[in-house]
Length: 322
Image 1 (tube, rainbow, N blue to C red):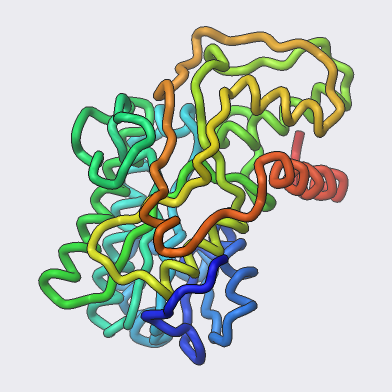
Image 2 (tube, one colour; image 1 turned 90 degrees about the vertical axis):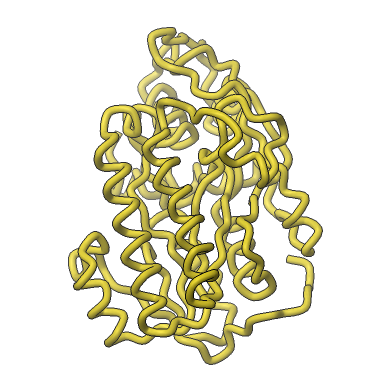
């Protein structure tokens, strides 16, 4: 991370990472070890973030001074398309309860975490922050996208009406250790990694790839995402949301080939045309974040290598299923 003038110091602050066991949340917890702050977490079985009264009571008792809203119901194309009510309701309730409660108890600063899936399916590339709401959404993830768009506007509304220092960041596709690995419901990298690992271990002749393999996607390593979010918490207090990306886009088939090379798999690919591709491209314009002084550190291959090492160790330890 490049040094930049701080507008908000985390030193000595009580900081709540909502969703601390998720992909980004766990990376944030690790990243915040380097800050002189008091980390606050609460387990899902102790606090249901979809229940407003419970969230407000917990905030009143815990009194965090800064909040990272990384809690969400997430998943890949299949999960989004098959569970629209869950993706819309859960995410709207989580963000609304935390943002409203944070305002009520006087939280000093809040960062809401969204996703670049908020943008139109056929947005110009790379996608700038002001491309929001300029066209129809990608149908397979519109429920999740609508919830995240609502979160952006909630932060802006509480800024305007109540003077809250609430900001929003929209990372591109994320991956890393601690991700959810499931062939049907996870995001593309963990889904591919799980399938390719199994094919290598069981000597399968081919691996199925959903769709054509031709769409381009941009990927950001979870540790870099966490670093960017801490950077924004400390240095940014603007009204508009900020894209967080790498500027590097690859075809899905290229990602599969890169994972196969890391895993050591030498088989073929079979494309399932019955599965949807999603948007043809989705590259974030991260010039605003770059101009503030931040840039990613972990390259795609290095991130995939670290993720696979974590996956293999976790699988061997019986913490993951095939």
